[in-house]
Image (cartoon, rainbow, N blue to C red; front, side, top):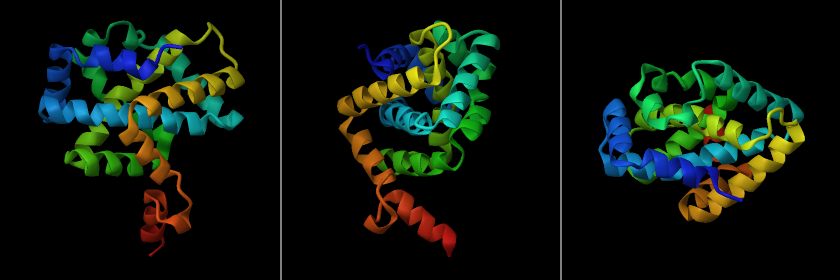
Length: 192
C-alpha cells in the first residue's frame, strides 16, 4: 500500500510549493519541511484515533465529502491550492475534527522544530485539507466508516514507520497520564 503521507510530502516539497508554504507562515524552507515531516504523520495518527469510533469516523467522512463538494479537492492540484487564499482556511477543519487534541500536536512539533506553536498550527491547518483530500482520492466512492478506520490505521502505521520522530511523539501524546506523556502534562496543567 502506498503511503498517503509520502505522496503528499513529495508534492509539498517541490521547491516552489515548499517556498510558498514557508512564505505564507513566515518560516524558512528547512523548518517548514521539518515541521511537515513530523506534523503530517501526527495529523494522520490523530485522525486514525478519531476514526476508532463510529461517530469520529462519520465526522471524518463528512469532512472528506465537504472538501470534495467545495472548490474542488485540494489534493488534485497541490500547487494551485497552496497558492490560493483557501489554503489558510483549514483551521475550521482542524477545530471540528481534532479540537483540543491539536494543541499537544502543535506543542510537540514546535518543541522538535523550534518553530513557534502558532506557525506550526498554520502549517498543519494548511496540510489537513490536503490530507483529507488525499484520503478521499484513496478511498472508494462511498467509503464505510469501518473501511475508513482500517485505512487510517494502515496509513498511520506506514507514516509512523517512516518517521521515527513522529512515532515517538505520538507515543508520548497517547501515554497514560501517570507516565508523564505530553497529554498527561497538559491535563495536569489545565487542572491547576
